[in-house]
Image 1: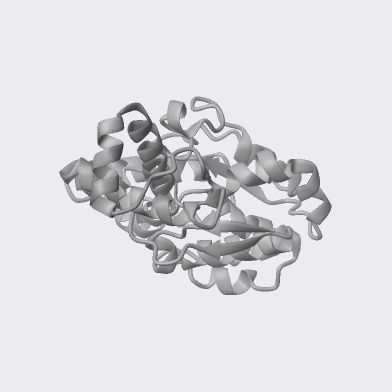
Image 2 (image 1 turned 90 degrees about the vertical axis):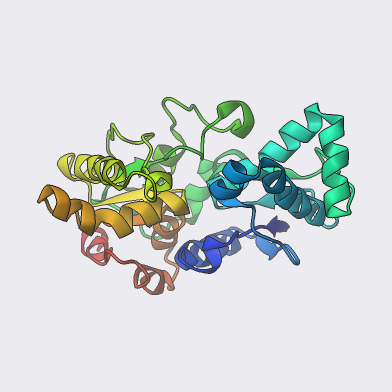
Length: 288
């Protein structure tokens, strides 16, 4: 079985371990992820702030490319996914906007033809927890995990239509079926502040500190996330935030696909872990 795959910019660079682990986990589940041909950047958060039409056009082009070969695409980056979903939402409501986007990209938009999904959404809703449980070769006993959703995986809920935006459970269900202990994490849906770093550094440090410190206080061995932007913010800012507040915040922040790879017994996990700035190597001693 093949599904279209849109990695986005960061999974080809700063979040390479997310890219590798996602492909490996899906392969082990019998799904071949086929990268879209000639895809382009979605515009991230910056383009939508500076030029909303450009942001929509960038994503519209990707959707037009996807529609040529696929009826379903998986997008690991929540920011990229929301941007793609916004094109479907706004162009679907405004025919004139749809026509303008088609003129800009030189392609017809087949709205609704391509299902736009996050890999966690496919794992929970399409594959199902029972099938995931069958794949577990190395239950993650003794590992205590804080599930962190961030903002855009589940919001805006009208567009994402995945999980409860106030009390999501998808990551918790996955963590539990992999054999680890899912902790009650009060900051699981709080913003990491990553998008504010260039305009309000102090606020970003405070938001990052609150998430990392909360995970530490509840006894977590690691934070598990489904967002590459959140992972990058928490991992890269932990030292600066710790220094600012004179506390140690060396909390490993790994992707849910890496956790699955560990439980599935995929041999490449150590290679993924080596790419992290805060080493998750102590996780091995917890799971045996």
